[in-house]
Each structure stands twice: as C-alpha cells, then as structure tokens.
Length: 482
Image 1 (cartoon, rainbow, N blue to C red):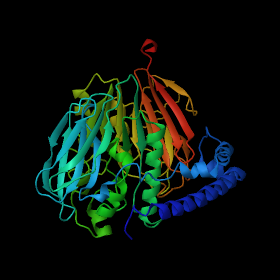
Image 2: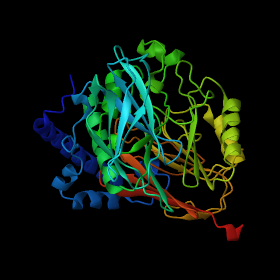
Image 3: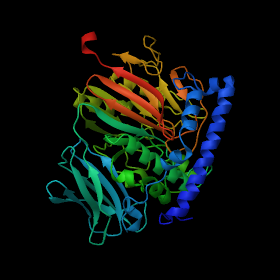
Image 4: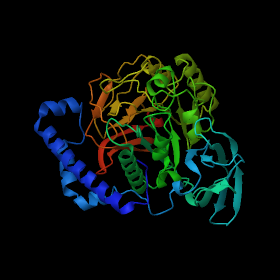
C-alpha cells in the first residue's frame, strides 16, 4: 500500500478513530495496573508519577484536544515526496555554526544547498559531494554542509540542482544561550510489521515529532538513539522515518541501531546484501574510521554544543571494546576542557527489558567512568529506565538520592538513561536490574528533554501523548563543594 499524503481528510478521520481507540485501551490498561499491586510492582521499580495521576491527566484532557494534539502536520508546508528529491535529512554539524544535509537525487551532477539568509536576503550555494547511491537504485547520494550560521537567524533553503529541486523549507539556527536544550527519542523502528502496518507507525512518529518540537521550540537538535527503521534494507521504511516536516526544521543526531545496519546475522534474516544503508541516509560530523559495522561506513562521531562534548558510538561495530575505548580517549584528549560529556549509543550497559542484551556492558562502564562521562544515552529496550551512578566495575554508588525529582551534586560516576520507543512501534515488558533505580512501561511514546548549563544537567522524561512528566532528575556540578 503506498503512502499518499494527499488523502488528508480520510486519513485524519481514520487516524482519529485509531487514536481514540488507543486512548480508551490505555485508560483501561492503567485502571488494571492501578487495581493490581503485583502488576504495578513489576512494571515500576520506583515511581514518581503514580498511575492514578496519569489516569486523571488523561481523563481531564478532552478527547478532541487529545486527538488534535496528535494530528499529523501535512499541510503547513509542501512534503518532500512531491518532488524527485528523496530522503532529505538534516544532521548536526561539528558546532552550532554548521548544518549537515543528506539527500537522494535522480541526477548524477552534484547538487547543492541553496541557502538564503532572511535578514540580509543573501543567498549562498553549498555544493554537495555526489556519488551513485549504493542502496537506492537510480539515485545519486548528495552530502553537503551549510556553514557560517548565525544564532537565531532564520534561513530558507532547498536542495537539488537544475534536474530537480526540493520544496523551499525554513530553518532557524538555535539561539546562543547559557542553557543548551536538546531532545532525545529512540526506536521509531518504522516497519515493525509484526505489530502494525508501517504507515500507522509513521503517522504516530509524525505526531510525536510535532508535539516535541511544538512544546520545546528552543531545542537545538533531536537525538534518535538507533533503530530508525525495522528493516535496514527497506527504502520505504527510511522514507516513512524521514518524510516529516519537523525533521526539515531541526537537526538530527542519529545513532546506529541493530535494525539499521547489515551484518552476517541480519543479511541472512532479511535476505539482503550487506551495504551502506545507514551511511547512505545520514551525514554525521567528524565521522571516524573506528566503530564501523561489517558492511556500512557509519563509524563513530562527535560534536560540541556550548560547553558539552557529545560522543556517539556505534555499538554494532565489528571491532571490540578496546577500539571503542581508544576512540573515546582520543576525543576526550582533543577536547579536555569541555565541562560536560555525554555519550550516546544504541545498546544499554544495564538492560531493563526482557529478552534484551548485548556485550556493551563488558566495556561501556569502564569507558564511561575512566573518561568522566556524565550521562550515557541509550535505547533498544523499548522500556524507559534510569540507572544509579556506577563506577568502572559497575558497582552502584549508594551516596545519592535516586528518587524522581532529586538532585545529585558532583557524582563521581556516570548515569545511564534509556529512552523507551518514541513511536509506540513495540513495547517490551520491564525486568528488574540491580543497577536501575527507576523504570517503567505505560505503553506510550516516550520523549526526553535535557537542559544543560554550567551548573546543571536537568533531565525531564515525558509520556508524549499527554505531555505528562514521567521522570525527572538533575545532576549538579558545584565547584565550591569539591
């Protein structure tokens, strides 16, 4: 079935009906959880949001408001699929003055980003590197970087060349403030066909993106912590992940997930050859030759915003923990004076979900502790969890208050935060894990807002459908207390 966005009215009615059914089912589920102390204990190790509070929040919000807040935005601008340009994605640059772009074109001539400053009216063309796509038949892969962005300035842009151009879109460079705000999502996993048709998942992902960017307009970028698609070789899945207006207005920091790249197991499972599927769809900064998967060119990467160093590891790498440690050491040594260090990868070191796991727990705690990582962001579990601070040997540090809303001052080890699915594609059931101090599964798409300034790193995790805060925690650096 093709994904035809012009059939707006019928789709909206259908989507509204599906969502109303989901709301009713969710309320019924929550009532059942409330009435069963045993089930609640299994689903939540500790709770800062009681099930009754969540139930009241959902009931108090009028049904029409619930549905309107989720309606996909198909009309405020022209969707990319009206042109011959395909798979446009915006990625974070090395610093805030850059925006990287990636797209497919039918032309073998290099494309460009036509970039217009709406304040001065000046237009600049940024030429793309162009090569035949290794994964999308008949298309050419274009990668370009817009540079010299001024904080707070709105730019108009389109990508392509005289053979085909995208529509014109708008991008506002983030304001330069003392507090850096960014969003965290994970496991959209478009195409999880065992659960629902991919178009329904894509509609829900669209609504989540719209709500996140509407409620947090100051966000600089969005992390997506892996499993962008369900089938690494399915071009339709990638288009359903990327083809959303919010992603044309905010930069993405994508992470390699186990569904995103080919290896000896998945090539046999899906019957597709190994190739550069992830790399063909994203244009990340400072991409390394370390951390590459068996078939892709993805690698690790890093970027800096304000006084925060972000290190993104490919946990699907064909190499082991020693090489990953070498990479983290190199990047930290190159940027020793950044006040905060945040590491992101797909697999959690401490898994809070049944039937989930990898070998990263063998090396990630050592790396994160030895190189003074403050926060580790992960996905994969389809269950939300927050860990205690741990040392390099994975011992829990007990000298801190881990309750929701608490503040930890100058912790000596990293905290691990796992985001649940942000598309509702698949929900796993939590399992107890000795390092996890808070976890939960309420069958709602998850999103995380993180604010970082010189003194504090403030985490707020939300159930996106009701914009209910599910968890909150603050890490504070107090130089006077050292």
